[in-house]
Length: 84
Length: 190
Image (cartoon, rainbow over all chains, first blue to last red; front, top):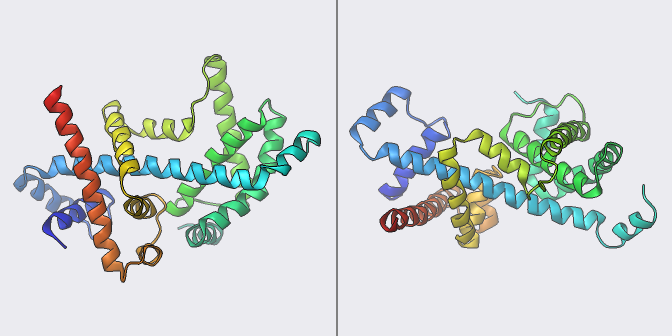
């Protein structure tokens, strides 16, 4: 991978606390020697929050489609004239 | 460690989300609709609350934090009852305010964030929507739906997990660059 992508991976491992994450001490050292790392990590954290929100929106959309398949059309009509 | 029932549900959701959600919907929604009908809710309320409950269940199941001591349907009814009580209290406090779309997930997210973090999060949401379809699918499949990279590779035609991993980071980089460019120009022209 390109160094830029490896940097994204390094930050991801810390934020998502994957098994490959650095120890707290090693991460602190990296933050000290790399002046832009903290800001990059903060930006990346915002990306993950935005993706989470986007995922929820997509899931809600999928659920609306399932609802329409199960209860839309003639089923909705039937339910209006014969409430269960 | 999640119990076998929760693990089975997680596996089913990851293997075929639409099928697993449809099965849950068919079983549990009538129970929630009946409960809501008896407690002052409309059909639309039942639909909104039930879908919020399914979002909660999905996130817990794939996140490995779900503990099922009863059936998934019973669990969903329990979440829906709590959400509905919460919503009724909210309406009693603010009787003239309509419930916005997706209010509960947004409120839950907002509760986790400081005020400063909310605005960039919504900006990121905008840029996720502008990504190409393939990038958006890969990022959401991995970071939200928590599908394994083997499955993501297969679904998107990548030769290996390694290729899918590289593609995922390229997409993340693209998203980050869009967000950065937007924030940079906003600061310049402020």
